[in-house]
Amino acid sequence: MTVHPSELAAVTQPVTNARGLPNAFYTDPEVFEEEKRKVFFRNWAALGFFSDVPEPGDAKPLTFLGQPLVLIRGRDGVLRVFQNVCRHRGMILIERPQKIERAIRCPYHSWCYELDGSLRTTPHVGGPGTNRHDAIKRDELGLFEVRSHTWLGMVFVNIDGQAPAFEEYAGDAIARYADFDKPLYKCGGEGTFTMEVKANWKLAIENGAESYHLPWVHPGLNSYSRLEDHYHIEAHGPLCGQGTTVYNPSLSEDGRRFPEFADFDAKWNQGAEYPMLFPNIMIGVHKDQLWGFIVEPVSHDRSIEHVQIYYADPSVAGDAWAGMRKKNAEMWAGVFAEDIFVVEGMQRGRHATQFDGGKFSPVMDNPTHDFHAWVASQMMA
Amino acid sequence: MTDRAAPDTDLDAALIEAHEAADHRRLVVLYAEAADHAEAAGDIDACCFYLTHAYVFALQTGAGEARALHERLLAHGREE
Figure 1 (cartoon, helix red, strand yellow):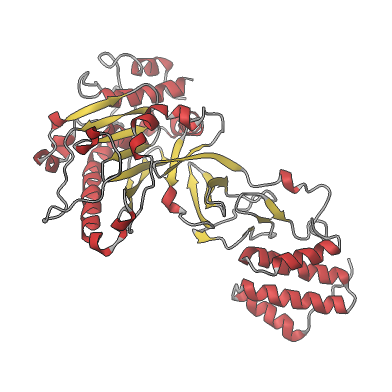
Figure 2 (cartoon, rainbow over the protein chains, first blue to last red):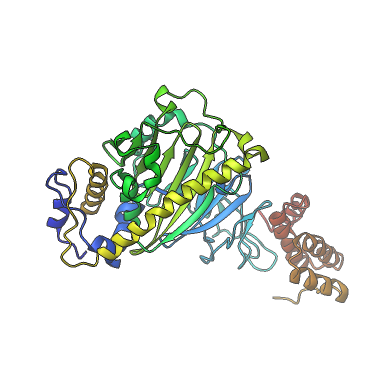
């Protein structure tokens, strides 16, 4: 790695004295390669959304940090993640999102797998017309399953299989948002969108973590959610972010509101939170909707932001809510779009050779520092 | 390896057409028909070759014939 250990030690100092992560964390492909292993594969990374494969038999292939993966909803309703390769010759099994009628057939030699990954048949493996051989032990040749967990409509994976259980890894977040661990509804297509950014993945997370930038980058929020209405979320482990004590969006001229979740704590009547669960997801938690903002790292200077908005009640899918759904999705897409110029600007800024990682405000930048220090600690481990 | 009993010309053409159209349901029926012809001709290897193809496409498409095709292959010691 092209970063000296002392530069990482400086990041993990208390916020008053700390520096931000060195430039190489944003500009060096070698650091990005090391992050894959130490930050993403070792931990629970956000991969996609529960709603990507809503029905039994639905399959969605994707490439995550170079890994060919596939999300599959089984006949039992369980969402599983597999490496998208046949155990025979390593051929990619599923090229595009599709409904699997019954079995996954490899397009090369037609080995067939059940939706739970078990190997069903191996045609001609013992010679023409003979589909068995003593050396081919089907119970040892199922698809490689990737450890996965679903929470709040998001799918997380631990690629190396060695992380603590998700419940332990994300325990603070699970407890903090227990009121929202309920059925979530996608409701129409407006709330599903992506944005490509010319920036390192961390910059999107850093930006989302703090409220300091809100009055400057999102001036539209000043009218109802001022800077002083916001607070920081600081926790031990892979969680930080910001919250507001004023959540009261106006999406309809007649004052209509989306149906709310049932049985939530009174603090959510007026409040909302925007936690980052490290490494790569921001979540928007509100009394009437919840969204995930997954930052997919593509390279050291390219990322794709995947957004999915969920609602509290399936009735929101109806035509009666279409106008408000559209307005809501447009509002969030507009907020996220407002952030792109700063995320891409910081990426270009990281090529300034004298930039030393940056100086944090000990008052306003604490969540950003939490994230930097966490990344540094993962890379030092 | 012995020569496999080939399906007749019409069946062969129908198989090619179904492959080109990626009509996997139709392939289940056509390969099963080819298997029946081979079995009637006493060519068990050819029969199991075609049964295998019918079975694979039945598995892929969720066709109800999968169970019976599997049982025929099992009876010939060609499946698990």
